[in-house]
Image 1 (cartoon, rainbow, N blue to C red):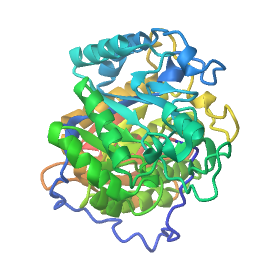
Image 2: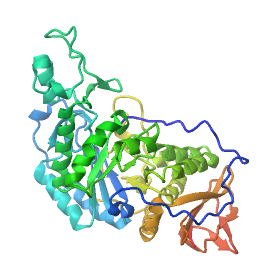
Image 3: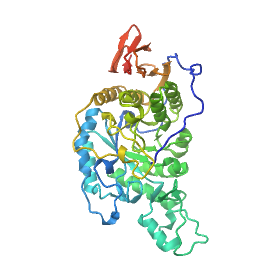
Image 4: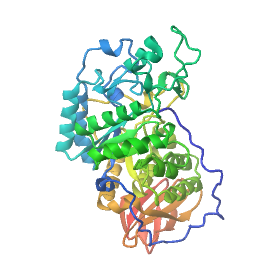
Length: 468
């Protein structure tokens, strides 16, 4: 949930070490990981609700004293924009009652009064369903806010509190009136860690998940999943799937062995931070060897699971800020033409900018209030429409492998293929036109380029996506 910079592998690609460059593979059909069939066809639009509706993120009023403000309905006029982009999923950031930013939950069974109530949630679900849009919820199950009633009871009653079993506390040496020595999340004192060895926590999470799945959600983003023992998810998720076998679970994982975590935890997917970093670093630094290396490492995960891919989210600087506005389309082209379950962070399709800073309020610029109705589309918006349409026409991209068939510091050609079809993505970061191989593609689908005799001429700072 915080700012993240993920180091790439220490092995950097050099012109002599990119073993797959020039190869054109067509035997990349692989067995699908075990996930609901609908996931192959979904692409998400990611919203941070508290910011979106203009709610006060750091209110002085305790949550129990706040009046209900029916703001969730502000999302409804944007659902037609989501559908117009071609997307068919709405990923909601935290919507449950919390003390401040949504990740310090105080009641998992109550909609945050700054957003509305159960009826507002139901209305949003109904509006999404009417448009064929699935809904994913953000589940914060590693920790709760310090003002959560369960923890306040522990502070007041000590180990005799009926909720003491939710938290891992060493009570030796504790005396009434002393601070409760509970664990926290990454040093944030307001975030109290749950005890994931506790059956009480397991039961609570199962109850929360099934409650909201029963209210119409399609799955869960598992916040800070990397901080939770995989064995906990392995106990919880089968119990949830017994009642909701079609639910999808994607864990937020920012470091570590994602494939091993998926195998041990039974989550369906994890967030692909390494690919995100390879895309924006590679473009921003004019070093597409870094992007190519990230794509090749991304491919190695596909035998185990299909990652959740993105180029922006609520925790990082906007992609148009990270790479420069004229290269935002390049990043989107990669997102939609390599394997994964893609997420568009709301506003990125307009090229909105914003810097994530390490300070109180440092997230505000990337979590802004949205206008009441969508603005007029931009050239970048139309590029997103074309890329999403291509993705919808070729759902096999969800799990297909990608070859790097041409690579320099400022130009790359990626070919994502099965034995029966291929999509080619070409990027040019240079200030001059460049000619690159078309890698057997015959039709330009998005971006702009001149295709002749198997050669693609990209304009300065141009990109194109082609099909065979």
